[in-house]
Length: 492
Image (tube, rainbow, N blue to C red):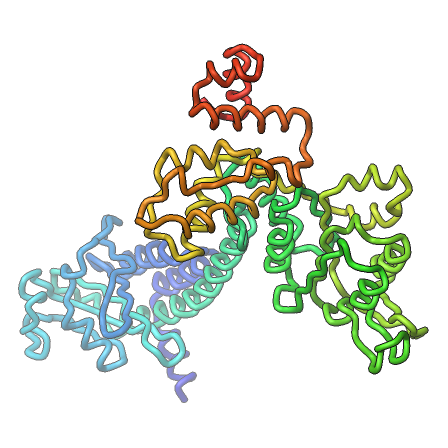
C-alpha cells in the first residue's frame, strides 16, 4: 500500500521536478564527498522549488549543525540562527515532512522567534533518515508567500531527502575506508618513529625507513651493527609492524653457547636423545611457528648448526635432536651479527648458501658515534626510564656525553646515565656525575681507523675542556686538522 502511495506521489510530480530528481540522482551517484554532494544537490532543489534559501542540518545528540546552507544566488549561509530552530525541532519531533504556506498566520509556528525576526513566510522541512534514525533535516524557505510550496513540492523534497540519505550512507562508508587507508599509509611512511627505537638523525631515519618497508613482508632480514646498537630492538620492531604481530616472537643469543645445548634449544629433542632428556621437548622454532624468530650473533653458529638452520630457511622444517620425524614450521627469521659475514664466508667459517638465504634484506644499524644528535633524546628517554625525568641535564653535561666515543654504543650510554642518576644527589645532572672508564674505551670497539681518529680526538677535547689548540698539540696535528675533523662529525 505504501509503495503504491509512493508511486502515485512520484507520478504526480511536474516534468521539471522529475527532471530535477533525475539530475540530482546522477549527481549523488557521482559525488565523492559529503560537503560537495549536499551543496550541489541543495542548489538544484532550491531552484526547482523556486525557494529563496535551503538548509541541510545535521542532527546528533539533540543538537543541529550546518552541513551546508545556500541562498538562491548560490552563496553560503554560515549562521544556523538565520533559520527557524522551532521548525527544525518540529520536523524532528513529528518525524515527518512539514509544510507551511503562510507561517505568519499559523498559530502553531508563528510564535517562533526566528520566524518573526527573519520575516519568514513559507517553509518546507523534511527529515533525513539513515535506517530508522533521523540524521538531519532538509529545509527550504521564503520570505514571500510561496503558492508554489504545495503538497507536490513536499513530495518532491521527500524524494530528494531519500536520495540524499542513500548517498550519504554510501559516501560515509567510502570516506571511512579512505580515512583508514590513509592512516595505514601514514603509519607505514612515518619513518621518524618506530616501536621502542629512539632517534631523529639521518642514519636512524634511514634505518627506520628500511624497517617500515620490510616489516609487512615475510622476507628474511639480516641486521648488521656493532654491539649495543639496538639490533634486538630493531628485530622486535619489525615483528610489531608485521602481519605476524599477534603471533609469538622469540629470540635466541647464539654466541658462547655449547653447540649441543644450542641445537637442543633451537630444534628441541626426543625423549632419551641424551642423558637428562627424560621427556620430549619442543624447540624454539616450533614454539615460534606462525610468528617471528630472532637469532642474535648468527656469526657464532657452528657449521653443523648452520646446516640445520639452512634446512629451516629452505623448507620450513626441523628435526628434533634424537628424532627422525620431520616437523613443519612457519616462522620468519630475523638474524643479527656484529661480525663481517662476507669475510667469514671467504674464510670458510660461514656457509655461503646460508649467508644468501639470511641476507635477503640487510639493514645496518649505525653506531652511536655516527648519530650524536640523538644523544640528547636518548638521555631524556633513559632519565625517564629510571624515574629521573625531573632531573635537569646541564648543557655542559650533555656536551660531555656527546663527545664520548661510546664503543659500547646505546647500551653503554644507558649504563653510564643509570650510574650518573645514582650519583646525583640533587635535581641537576652535572658533568662530574658522568663517569666513563677510560680503560674500557676500546673494549668492544670494532670501527675503522677513521672511527678511531674521531674517537681519540673527542677524548682529547674532553681532556682539555674543548681547547682545540691544546688538543691539536697533544695529538701532534694542526688546529686546522682538528677543525676539519670536527666539521666532518657535524660539530661546529
